[in-house]
Image (cartoon, rainbow, N blue to C red; front, top):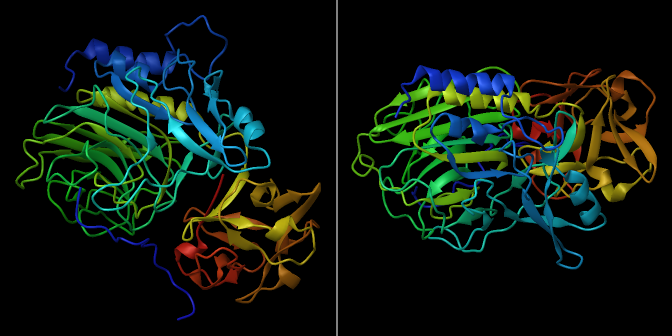
Length: 493
């Protein structure tokens, strides 16, 4: 067949993997999230408190707090992450300005070269920093580091960057302190890109083994997002929020299907896993609006090793506990707590996340091809009219930076010239080339962004499509009948 529709990205690894009762405390947490009751003497900030202030007020303080986009405490003024540029291997710590990441500092430091993220700093004070993941039982290492410019975003109009993880990339801290071990209770939340996933194992954030090996059932507890069906899964085509408890991704009480665990593919997805003695839960929602939903809340799996749990307390990002690194995803922020957070606390955290304004204030950034994990690219930054567009490894360069205008155009600016994405010769048939052309306001230069991740031509109704479902650098982009394939799914920013 000419084209493929699979989003499975190489599931190639071996099998691995008190409630608050004081109403006044819960009410204070919620009031604090809404009213911002914490007063600081610093300049005007993104918020008077962050998620970890809310967790602390609820009696379940953070023991790890990671973000490349914002401070997770209202008073935090340290570094969020570190980047290293390829031109001279020098590094720079990226801090906060008014609570948001100082993305301008990264932009100036990385101009004209490629940067990778070397450290994601822990804001909790426990020094649980995430660095390059070492080799593990399921994959050699060390893993790759994420390109620092590959996941641009915005928060209330402030530029920032997430951690864009293709297969083979991962971060870890095998010497973490303060995290839950054994059967002790913990909470974990993360903000992911719900449109960037695959069927590989395993895109995780959370608690894992301290030796990067599969040490048996119940030796880890992490949030996982993807659409692999080997273990637990939910309704629809995925992705699903599941718990990686080692040797299984669980969507409910046992491995397999849980009809209450829905496909959760918001552009910015809140994902939560909480766990304690014979009790765990899955919660999730839209990080841009609304409340959390509970997809599971009950007993541990009825399989030996999971009750009681045997958590070891390391921290992973982007891989499984044994360094299974066949998955892909994007991480923006997350934290781990001691103790099982109350629903009131987590509702207040969700309100804080929504108020952070992910994705607001602009529609400019890389246009990610979901199936390939690459970006829409103007070849060689050309200004030659009629050049067919391609996909290429994300670099953050100007020829991969697209702007969605209020009139529905997609523009790219290279060498001072702004061009529009254009359906060649106003074509309305399969195979019409997606080219760049002088912006002229015609309908063949207008594009609709759809809730399923597709981009359709206003004139043709056809989908923007990576030819042959290719994942290779230089694969050409065209228009084709919409078919649900991941080679027709895109995310901007």
